[in-house]
Image (cartoon, rainbow, N blue to C red; front, side):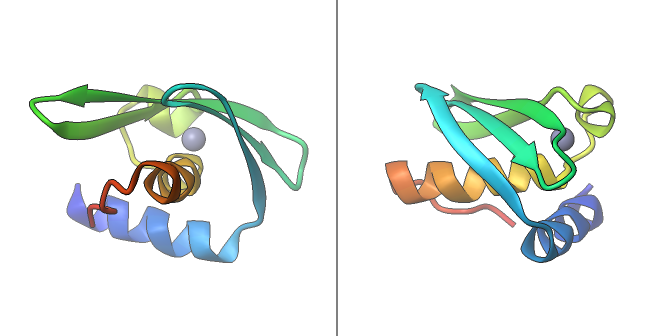
Length: 83
Ligand SMILES: [Zn+2]
C-alpha cells in the first residue's frame, strides 16, 4: 500500500492535471487527456482519507488524481501530506 502511494506521488509529479475545488473536501481533477475525476476527502479520527472515482480509486488503490487533489487540499487546509 505504501509503495502504491509512493508510485502515485511519483506519477502525480510527472502528470499535469487541473484541480478545482467545488465543495469542502471535494475536488474535480481534469487530466490533460480531458478525463474528469472526482476526489473526495473525509476525516476519520483526525486522519484524512481520500477517494477517487477512477478505476484505481474504486479498488482503493492510491492514484495520481487523489495525490493531485491531496496537494491542493493540503495547500488550502494546512493538513500535512502523508507519504
Ligand atoms: Zn483516480
